[in-house]
Image 1 (cartoon, rainbow, N blue to C red):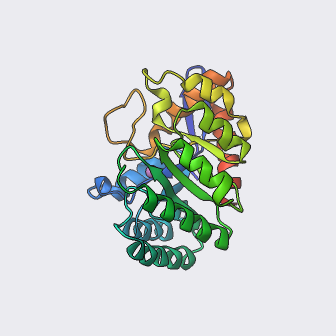
Image 2: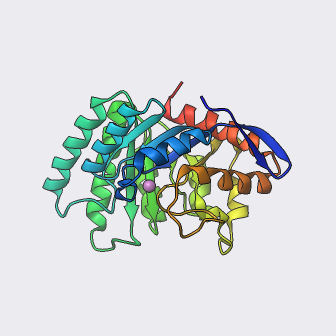
Length: 274
Ligand code: NI
C-alpha cells in the first residue's frame, strides 16, 4: 500500500482515500486507463468502487475489479441507459443479475434511480427499472447506489412507500437539496458528495455538509465527470478526491485526515469490504 505524505494547508498526513464512485470503465479512459489507475493508486487512493450504468459498462466494471485487487464493482442500468420497453428492461436486468452473481467483487447494485433532467419522456419506465433493481439488490442482500436528478419526490416516494431496501444504500453525487438529504438520512442512507460542493456557485453546499453526520458521509469524484475546483472542466480522476475532502474539512472544522479516515470507514461499512 502506498504511503503518501500529503500536505493540506498546514497538515501533513498519510493519504489513504476511499473513492466511493468512479467510472474507469468510461471511454474517456480508453487511451490511458492503466496509467491513470496506477497514478491514482500511487497517489494514495487505495480503494475504488467502479460503477456500472448499463449491461456493458457493468461487465467492464467487473473486468477491472478482477484485474485490480483494490477496485470493486457495481452492476446496474442507470435511468439514462434504460431501453424503450419493459420486455427489453427485463432482459437487461436478467443480465445484470447474472453479472452481479458472477463475481465476489460486486459490492452493490447501481447506479440506478431516476433522472428527469435528461429524460422526461419515460418516467414510468424509469420507475419500473428502479424498483426492479431494488428487488435484485434485496434478493442479493446488497446495498444500492442511487442516481437521482430533478426527481426528488418520486425517488423518495419509491423508497418510502413502494419498496424498502434491506440494506442502507447511498445517494451518489447527492443533489444539494435539503429535503432530499434530510429524508435520505432518515431512511438510513449514506450521502456521497462530489465535485459540485467545491463549485463557487453552489449556494447551499455548506449547509448540506453541516447536515450530514460524520458517520454517514462519503466522498467520490464520479470520474471522468464533474471535476472539482480548481480543476473544473478537465477530465476528472480520483486524485481530485482531496479537494472534496478539504471542502468538507473546512466546513465541519475538522482535519482533512479525519475526513479521509471517516469516509474510508463509512465506505467499508456500506460496501461490506474488509
Ligand atoms: Ni456515476
